[in-house]
Image 1 (cartoon, rainbow, N blue to C red):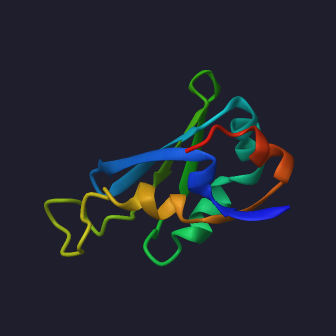
Image 2: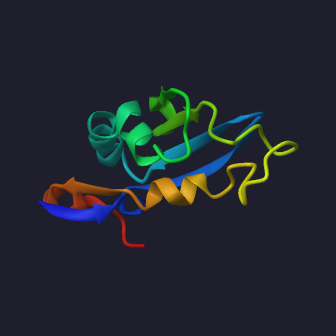
Length: 115
């Protein structure tokens, strides 16, 4: 097993939906998607964003795209027009998720394309 950051397995894009944010996470390979389907729960993402996410985290699966969409409810302190926080639109949340560390089997890591 190796400890790696999530960006080893996936790409991300994030943004705002009013006072909520969403993170689209796209696995680099079908094997990475299968691993993330088990390893990256809504609860784990909620724990990662615990300091800023005041509501539930919901995970939507998009297996045909090898992707997930995580909606972080009440994470933007009112949203882009109301919040005084530095990222009132959640644009950096995808990058923040990609910095999460995971224990990954080295066999899976060997199947990933070079970056």
